[in-house]
Amino acid sequence: MPTYKYKTTINGKVQAGEIEAENEQGALGKLKQKNIKVDSVRKKSESAFLGPKKRRITERDIVIFTRQFSTMVDAGLPLVQCLEILGRGADNKTFGEAITKVKTDIESGANLSDALRRHPKIFDSLYCNLVEAGEAGGILDTILSRLAAYIEKAMALKKKVKAAMVYPGAIVTVAFVVVAFLMVFVIPTFATMFERGGAELPGPTAIVMAISNFFRHQWYFIFGGPILFFFLFKRVYATERGNIEIDRLVLKVPVFGMLIKKVSTAKFSRTLGTLISSGVPLIEAMDICARTAGNKIIEIAILNTIEAIKEGETIAAPLARENVFPAMVIQMIDVGESAGALDAMLTKIADFYDEEVDTAVEGLTALLEPMLMVFLGCVVGFIVVAMYLPIFKMGETM
Image (cartoon, rainbow, N blue to C red; front, side, top):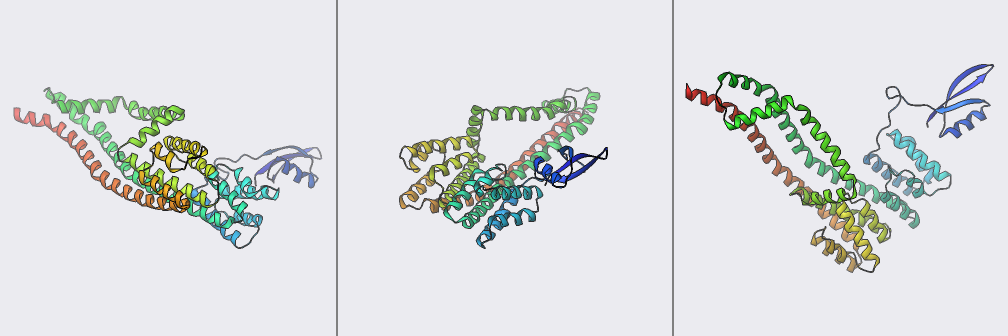
């Protein structure tokens, strides 16, 4: 609980103290029960150096909580007791405080789903809607188990994509550091020697010299440029038009665009399949899929599909018109709708595209590794050749 500092006057002397309470009114109430007349009370601020730091709540924390919660509910324990145990036993104390607040809200008469909705940064709309469906259908333990499985699959998908980005990022960083070192410390030594020679420099050498001067004298552009680009990109991406155009461009990027489409397909299929199998209405499930799509073009396509469904169309036909998902996915959704097994078909699609993402990531890594090594070799090789061309020329003259 938060700590509150208070001041009270006893026998004409001001005394200070501390008390733990959920809020300021709770602190005043506890002090009143102790017959302490309060002059002032305020929440204790936590020092960045002395006080405990709030840990970020990760997906792993939510998965562990959901798994344990499902087991407890399945064992027949009351919700309040489950949440009390989980709140006290949470490794992440920040998350433990949030669970305790959920328990307090339930004790005050709120439903579990409503109590969770009061913490939107922790429990998203997908989580809350599934819990609400579980409460209504009396299958909360089953829903929580499905939720944990869904979050685990989503985490695995993110790890695959991040793994694909780490290697090229590392190679590019190393390449930049190597080139910067050469330009700042090595090339100037050659420059001094060439100036003393007085001979006209070959074209490649002149280019490298100019780049070296830029690195040494306009270094602030090298560091300031990316920062300025990042802030401009963020400003543009924050606008509706900019968001749409950038997301459209991302989907058209060679290799990476195809990977993003496969990731989006797997995410859409698993989310929609999980929601439908848990009893969430189709329109509401599609709306959640749109809000969690992660790409504006795909989000617009799903929203357009929702409008078509409201007018009596199936899912497959309007999705096909939007042309954002592969034709095979549309056909499988169409078959699933016709057979009355849409949720099962969507799960199969998600599993298939999870494997496709695996294959794409492995292929991308295998493709990028030699390409980046060749690129780095060409850059360093060009610099070396450019520096030795004048030396060869001087040797020929002599």
